[in-house]
Every structure is written in C-alpha cells, then in structure tokens.
Length: 162
Image 1: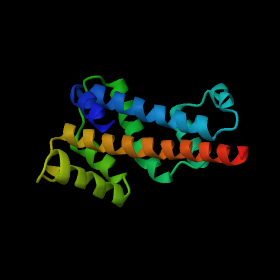
Image 2 (image 1 turned 60 degrees about the horizontal axis):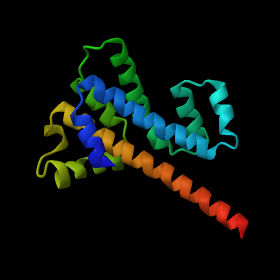
Image 3 (image 1 turned 90 degrees about the vertical axis):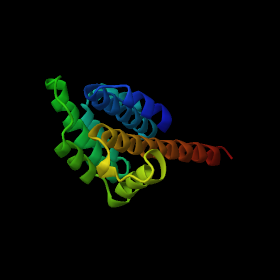
Image 4 (image 1 turned 180 degrees about the horizontal axis):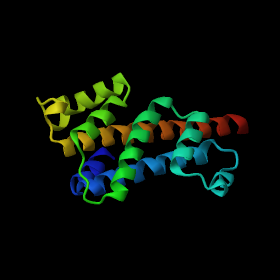
C-alpha cells in the first residue's frame, strides 16, 4: 500500500496531494464506523460531516492518537478547497508533524533515515516529501488499526459460532 501511495502522492500537485490524502483517510474512518456500528446504515442517515464521523469513531474506540493529525489534515484540506492556488507551507508541515504522537514522529524519522532518503533527516526533505511521508505513515497506521478491528470481529464471530 505505501508504495502505491508514494506513487499517487508524488504524481500530484499539492492541492491533489492534500485532497487525495484526506479521501484515503476518510475511507478508513468510514470503514471503521461500518465495522463497529451495530447498524451502520443509521450513521449514513444521520448525514454527519467528516469531523462528526471522526469524533464518533474515537467515541466508539478508534485510537485517539489519530484524531489530532486527521483534524490537522482536515483543516488544511478545507483551506485548500477554498484557495486552489494555495501551497503547503513550512508552518502547515510543522503543525501537522507536531500533531503526531512522539512514537509516530519517530516512525516518520525512521522511515526517512532507513528507507526512502537514506541518511537524510525528515526536516531536510522538501515540504512535499515531508507531507507525503506523514500521510503514508498515517494511512498505513490507520489502515492497520481498521484491519485489526476487522480481524477481531471475525474472531468474535467465529468464537460465537463454535
């Protein structure tokens, strides 16, 4: 998944990267809600905006550490949606980076040093690459959390059927 995301993000302009990153995260949140809600169709009927669905997800068990970076990205997406010529600023990157828990910040640093840009530090990358890496880490971690929830539910069903 992360290689696909790298290719997708790196072939986008900054507007495309921000919007597409948000779309991927929104899909994970919606899948999580469909897994944990007893009657997910009623969530759709409530016509919640994304921020409401994110808060509901956390209330229903989504790890709270996802809340701040996704909210930060949502704010950035909203700004981009109203100013199509906008570019990602150093301040945007710093605020997004600070929204991650320290262990996730370490994951982002490790991803740079040991993988994509061996020997470089995260802060030495261009802003687009920094954004891309943070979104990849966030997507991979959120997708893993949702996948774990799905596997837990399958195990509960199997246990119930025994």
